[in-house]
Length: 301
Ligand SMILES: NC(=O)C1=CN([C@@H]2O[C@H](COP(=O)(O)OP(=O)(O)OC[C@H]3O[C@@H](n4cnc5c(N)ncnc54)[C@H](OP(=O)(O)O)[C@@H]3O)[C@@H](O)[C@H]2O)C=CC1
Ligand SMILES: CC(C)(CO)C(=O)C(=O)O
Image (tube, protein in one colour):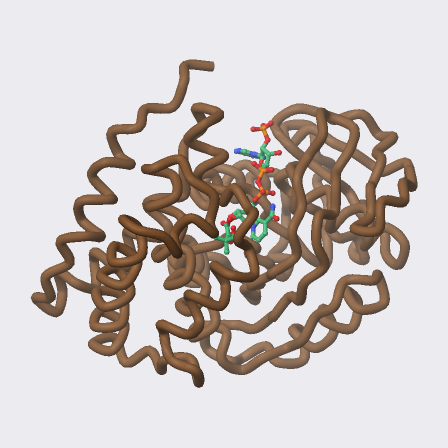
């Protein structure tokens, strides 16, 4: 590892997708709690397979050198632990890139990290197939920005790099708004489909459609009180458009519940419920979904 290395911590779907692309253009190390096989296979959205050898590492054995970028690609609930474990080994302050959904870890690590913090909001789709393979299920775009707009050139450089690596990316000045918009869509879809174990498209039917409408109304009122600008087409159009576009999906939270894994409930519903409480806004649907997801205990591993 050297000062040009991109260290990717969290070797799951997104981490491996990123590593398999970035390794074409920059030195990459992929690190996790356990070392994965160095030989990894990527299946592209078109169904082609390509394999490549990656530099893989266990976090506890990371060399004491500072990479140019530390990409955190764990789930939101694991990001603080992964950050602490990585930073305990790194002598300097790399640019920290946060890839998590929701809006929980971003402001927290922005306060704590001594170097620049870039947030990534991506619509790429990926899943893992065992320890040595990742499927790039659908191409999307990654928006990059920092919450205080102090690191525009770092965001542009990273967007260029991702583009060279074959992942569409754009540096933006409104990343906070984009993170809230994605959170709003996730809040309207994920908890309901996880609770009722349905595919996204079934939300268009009764009895779910009015439930989605009530959630959109709660989310819109909470975000208005936080002065988050609504999407150009409005909240209803945005949410129903994503539901239509992902109608056949089993959303990530449903997959987590079905596999007995923890969900990203706190990162997605937590910031909304905290804002509702701050502004004295009633959010009965979101509160009820949050409580029911909190009871869905992960399987013992
Ligand atoms: N997958 C996708 O298509 C998309 C994902 N996202 C977001 O990206 C983030 C990552 O998602 P995804 O890649 O799907 O998640 P995965 O569960 O596939 O990967 C998470 C990885 O983090 C590792 N991990 C967990 N805890 C630690 C730790 N303390 N230190 C180091 N590594 C750790 C896990 O390894 P292990 O548990 O084996 O140790 C696993 O390899 C989420 O916030 C998700 O919402 C956003 C858009 C699309
Ligand atoms: C937009 C949605 C709900 C698509 O399934 C998603 O991002 C997820 O599954 O987490």
